[in-house]
Image (cartoon, rainbow, N blue to C red; front, side, top):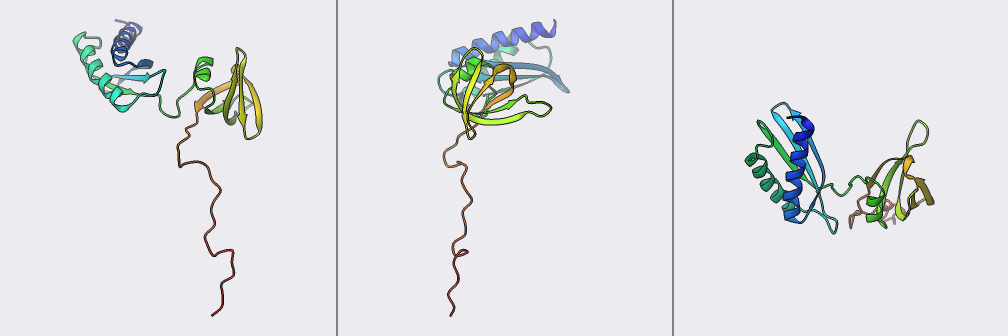
Length: 174
């Protein structure tokens, strides 16, 4: 059986198991490792986010299906995860889905890419517009080398360094 045929079977089984859990398959990779196959399945959910329970449930059920249907010959490791808080964006649909959220772009500019962080304001067929610290900026999709969500966690906002108390005041003499 060809590698592409094996991959298609794994994708088909993963999609069926994920759908039963109410999640989608975002990506599947299949590689040969030193001890056998390494199967990585990344789950997504259009509304909301994928949790640990989703990954654990799909892992158990998919492992059983792969073994039952002999989809992989020999030993295999199965890893099921979510795209993460800093997920990669893979096209205008992802940009549209995450409109209003903060992203980090690597934009092709000569020999070194420029890194831009900003909030997605507008998306159209040609590109996107970000609201960044430098103001509104527009980028063609063809110029974006990589795009990822920039996590915004409460309590971890970037702040100015605080000064220690008493350092700016003269000490009273005794």
